[in-house]
Image 1 (cartoon, helix red, strand yellow):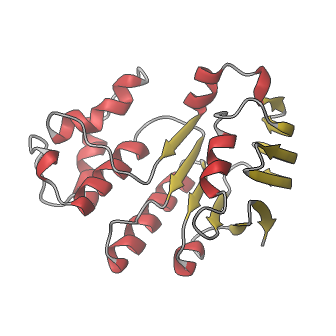
Image 2 (cartoon, one colour; image 1 turned 120 degrees about the horizontal axis):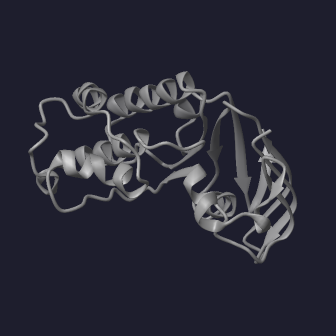
Length: 208
């Protein structure tokens, strides 16, 4: 068991009766806008400390864990694409360098051909389209070392056909590495790529 949440509430923003995440699971999170999906991700990563109830990460209360160490266990990928100054390769290396991790250049070249075909490593991402920036954002998140990935609508700026391929690649890649993944989506077809789906409705988590 990676995560266990029970009788959890925080600032009346979210209520969870009971929710368990197992190792290597892929879980889709659905629900209307403003229902509490992003609040769930913030809760899991330890953003809230003044909650009521039980929130355990590998059987340890989040309150007892160092916030910095805890966040290194997660890779949270927000909906908004972030592009830094510098070249494509410098953007890809940013997250790894921030975490003090080594960089496998050959692996990145291979993955980049799928996410950003035709883009050279010295190209300037500030000139990319919104879809290309999101694919860069997603690729950068994939290459860091973490235990759980949390994606907030990871394909919102991609066309429908490309979005399905990108998400399928991401989930397959992380599944092969034995990682745990949760992703927010409004698309029922995307949710089918997960092992199971949960719904946030009126700020309450429902196991579908």
